[in-house]
Image (cartoon, rainbow, N blue to C red; front, top):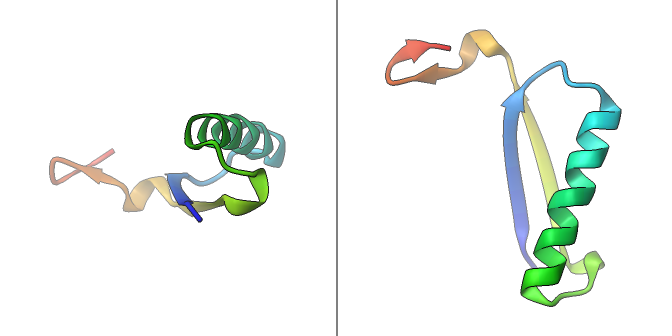
Length: 58
């Protein structure tokens, strides 16, 4: 049972997360040839102020 974790900046509308989840799920189900109910997808939203790249705030 695959578990996909997606971390992104907070504040995106629910409709955007729903559409992204549908697209990611469809790709994983297709390529791993598994039933959709075997896949778990978790979004973790992070404040932009807590996101650093190369030791610097984004």
